[in-house]
Length: 164
Image 1 (tube, rainbow, N blue to C red):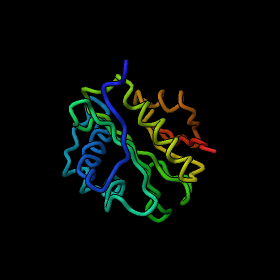
Image 2: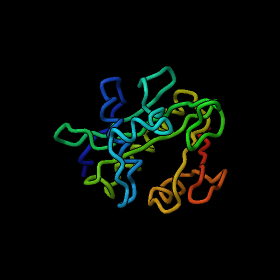
Image 3: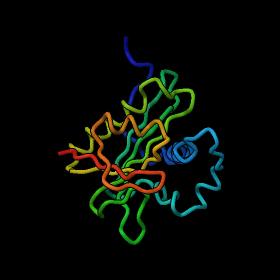
């Protein structure tokens, strides 16, 4: 049986949807209630989408059978002087992934992650990093897909994946 969604490359026209998925990622917890405006006004979050796409950005979008986007995953390099939560090195892009609530638990996140890793490898990217709070169910997904913890913080881990 085919998946009820397809995955395609992210485009510049997807900026608003990527922002929506960043908000989903920020609000992963049932107690998360940051608004779109709060996320975009916080430089620690906004730099994951500002000016999308910049040279070197890669992303994929899951689209449901009715043509509506239901999830996205993207990579962005952030420099040491403006690091992301999962910063490892300037040449290691950070992963952001978000899936609409009604699509969670249906394999969309895993499919997005696998496709983005595949595209990253074809683009010559050797490593991908991310930050995930330990209580987030996505932490298990990342570990299952081969990400390893490289740094621990109070409630979150920085994880790394070796593409090559």
